[in-house]
Amino acid sequence: MSKLFGSIEAGGTKFVCAVGNEAFMILESTTFPTEEPVKTLQQAVDFFKQFGSSLVSIAIGSFGPIDIDEASETYGLVTTTPKPHWANFDLIGFLKAQLDLPMYFTTDVNSSAYGEQLLEPSLKSLVYFTIGTGIGAGAIQDGEFIGGISHAEMGHMFVKRHPDDLDFAGVCPYHGDCLEGVAAGPSLEARTGIRGENIELESNVWDIQAYYIAQAAVSTTLTLRPEKIIFGGGVMAQEHMMARVRKQFAELLNDYVTVPELTDYLQVPSIANNASATVGNFALAKRVYEK
Amino acid sequence: MSKLFGSIEAGGTKFVCAVGNEAFMILESTTFPTEEPVKTLQQAVDFFKQFGSSLVSIAIGSFGPIDIDEASETYGLVTTTPKPHWANFDLIGFLKAQLDLPMYFTTDVNSSAYGEQLLEPSLKSLVYFTIGTGIGAGAIQDGEFIGGISHAEMGHMFVKRHPDDLDFAGVCPYHGDCLEGVAAGPSLEARTGIRGENIELESNVWDIQAYYIAQAAVSTTLTLRPEKIIFGGGVMAQEHMMARVRKQFAELLNDYVTVPELTDYLQVPSIANNASATVGNFALAKRVYEK
Image 1: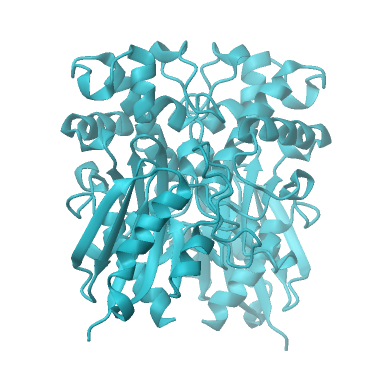
Image 2: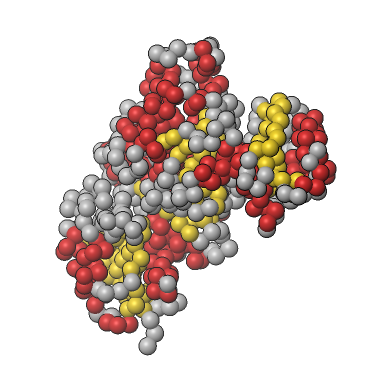
C-alpha cells in the first residue's frame, strides 16, 4: 500500500489538514476555524486517524512564534503568541500523545517557502512572505531554512514611516509600528475604519501599505540576496498590490544591487489555491519519515 | 617549508595586507591608504611577491558591492561603489594577472564574520556588523555565508526614524536615510557639524545613532535568528555605544522572541586589533587552497 503524508497548516484563523501521496498530490483535506487549542487539535487528530497505518508522518507549519529546537525543553510549544489560550501550549506534545508518527515542526511560512521551491528546484534561495492578518516570512538557502537559534520572524522588522502615515501608531501589540503593525490587514481598518476589502482602489492607503511591504522586500533583498521573493496572503492576492509593491521597491532600492526582472523577482505563489504550505508540508513529512 | 596564506582586507579608506601561517598567526602585514585601484593593488601585489612560492593562496575581503559569483562575467569586479575610479574595476583580474594563486573573494564583513567564528566554533550562526565610514554586515549559518544571488548588503536596510531626527535627510548617495545614511560615521558630522570623535558623550546624537543600530540588530535578529551579533568598526569601539545599543535593542524587541543575555548576544569582536577580517581571510585562503 502506498504511503501517505500528513500536513497541518496551523494558521491564526484556520487550520487546514490534508493527506497527500508520494507525488505530493492532495488526496483529502479539511478546514476548520482555529479555536481553543485542545478542541482544534482534536479535530486534526480525528482527521488523521481515518487513514490508519497508511499515514507515515506529518509536518506541521504553524503560526508562531514557536519553539522548533528539538533539543529545547519547550520544543513543540507555541510560545509568545497574543492569541488567547495558545501561548505556551504544547502543540506537538498533544499530537504525539495520540498519533505515534514522526513529525516535522516549523512555521507556516517556512512550509510555504518549501512548497514553492519544489516547483522551482533550480532556485537555490527564495523568501516567502505572507501578508494577511499578520505578516511572516520563511526563507530557504541551498535547501535549508534560514534560522539560527530559531525560526525567522521577519514580520516584525522595523520600517521607515510613510510621510502621510506618521500619526498612525500601528497595531502590533509588541512593537506598535513594526512592519506587521503598519502593513498587515488589520492596519487598513485601524487607519480608515473600513475593512480592507471595502476600501476603494483609489485610496492612498494602498500606496502606504505597498511602501512598507516594498521596504520589507528591500531589506530582505539586502540581507539574504534571494533569487525570488514570493508574496502570499490575502492582501497580496489583489492584483493591484503587486504592481504597487514592485514600483515602490524599484524606487527604494534605487539599483544599488542587481536583482532579477521585478516581474519575476517579486511574485505571487506558483502553487494555486493557497496550497503552498500543504505541498511543502508533504515534502517535509517525507523528509522526516526518511530520516 | 611551511605554507603561507595571504589576506587582503580591502577597505574603503585603507588596505591591510598580511601573510599568516597554518595556525593563522599574522607573520607580516602592511597597511596603506586606498587610492586609485591600479596604484593600490600594485602595492598589494608587491607585498605578496616577497613571499615567493611559500604563499599558496590569498583571500580578499573587500568593500563593495562586489561580484562574488564565479559563474558571472563580472566576477571579481567591484560594482556600484560611489568610490571614485573603483566602480567596475576588475580587482581579482588585476591580482590574478600577477599572482598565479587560488583566490577567495568575498566582502570584508564576511571575512570578519568568518574570523570571529573561528574563535567560537560552537556558534552555528553569527552576524558581524561594521559601523564606521559605511555600514556593512556579513552572516554565517552552519559554516556558510548567508547570501543567494550575491553577498549581503545589510547596511542599506531601512529603519524607523527617531522622533528627534526627522529633519535629517541622511547621507547615503543611493537611499538618503537608510541605515548607513543615518547611522554611519559621516552622519554624525553631517548632523552636528562636528566630527564624531569630538562630539560630547552627553549629546543626544549618540542615542539617535544607537536607536538605528539597535533596529538593525532587531531586524537581523528576526530575519536570521543568529546566536550572536558582533559590532566592529570605529563607532562601536567606543564603550558607551554598546551599552546604548543594548538598552535600545531591549526596548525595541520587547521580548517578542528569546535571545541570549544581551551582554553576550551583542558584542564587540573577540579578535583584537581589528584583525577579524585578516584571520578570517587566512582561514578562507586555506579553504580555497585545499579545495
